[in-house]
Length: 179
Image: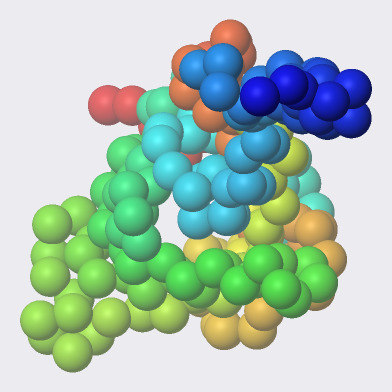
């Protein structure tokens, strides 16, 4: 059986196509770009407070206890005074993105079991290894409940900036003074 020149050309084209596309070579297909991480995935881990503003005044971190916030799944724990345990809800589809904190434990006291869980409304921004949170508060530290609409630390809202721990940042502390 003789092979025609058309058949030879067809086989050559198929082999050239297969080689170009890595078909049959065992080579892996070209890597796809990974799907972007959700905000809940990006916020996970430990964050160190690097600055803050309350009542229109920049909060000094000098001589104060280091404040670290740890996000694990939808749970947030804080160090410093007071130490808190919270559940969080993120809504990145809002502009700016919103975060709700439900304080369930305050210095170990189980507020949720007592029916006294406190809800704090805020907004957030995650850019690389920087997390900025603005939340409702007043200069006395009370939580009135209004959600901020912009990142400002005036009399009604507190503003905190964090750096991801492990992102080569210089430790700066905020929070209660050490004993």
